[in-house]
Image (tube, rainbow, N blue to C red):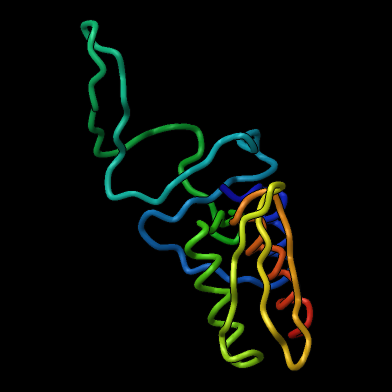
Length: 141
């Protein structure tokens, strides 16, 4: 999963989020930095009851944080969401061609812009796509 620090950089660079079912997000600077939240239809918890793991269903959850403005959240896009966003932004500048290669140290994402090949490397595919996307966001402004 994408690091919160990388997701914050994407947000600051102008990546917009339209919250959707099953999206992951974080709530920074409120004591929840180590928690990952997901948009869901219904809250389900896995608990040990009577010696067995059971899924328990809850229609609503009450806690100290009743609501928060979406702009205060940080979207944690999945690898697929990052790849889709990157491909969408690459179409105008390179025709959409991109390749992801695994290396002993992680992954390399490469695509061509004009006559230049750009390469972005990171320890996992999500971080690699995010690095490439950060570059495109910075150069499109």
